[in-house]
Image (cartoon, rainbow, N blue to C red; front, side):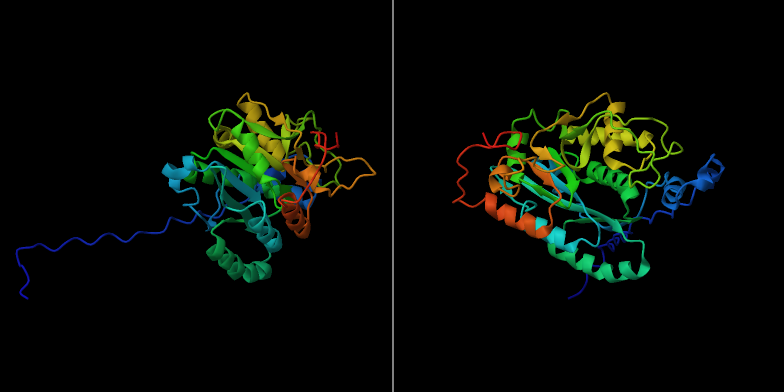
Length: 344
């Protein structure tokens, strides 16, 4: 066939370039001039030197998790679960139980796990192909190239809220919690449906008010005056598990831009709310410190958990066992469990 010589050649589309990798964040050496810095524990010094760092490369991402920005209003509940890269068994259990991606009573549920890296080269080399396989199978991993430590949980929260603003801006509600909790997702949906909706402020959990900063050097929660001079934190919900509206998540994303990171992530969210003139609230169905039953009763009785939203500190086999138990059609609780976790 003779080509049509009058047809001009079509321009080739320019190749799509990957987003630029953020430059490594360097230490703020001016911290060495702060009075008492040299005598602080090493992990505190490390936090202060890199406290300003907020941009890290995304190693694993799911930008289409919520159907893109336009589709995100269809997501009723996004489960954002803080996990360590080492905690594969916990993630697998959650995927099969309370973290299932499904539609429950018309409410679309989606899930992401929030992870960093161990910071140990040999471990990260071993974990990389395993996490990539996990991502290929489940498409639910958000991983950034920062060291996943207790003091970097606040950084993890800020990175997640930035991701949420970009990829899931219209999501109605967000459950944000640890990977060692048991969540009755059905009850979370029921409660969320009774609230005005994702366009008004909501943050509920185990409320902590007038909680003092810990000044004991040996404590996991030690925050010296060089990091934060205040004596008490603003009201906040314990980071083990909380429910917030999409509106509140967007407020946190905005206010966090002007608030320095502190080591305690849940207290930091309370600082963001305080700056916006908002308050967190208590929910009796969220039990970060256990169900609170009488000494002569069974604390693993599924009749308690059928009434609650969340209980902290479960190992994977307990999560699986309790999820099966509360969904057993033969479960007969007899008397109702009160909001205080006791039989009535």
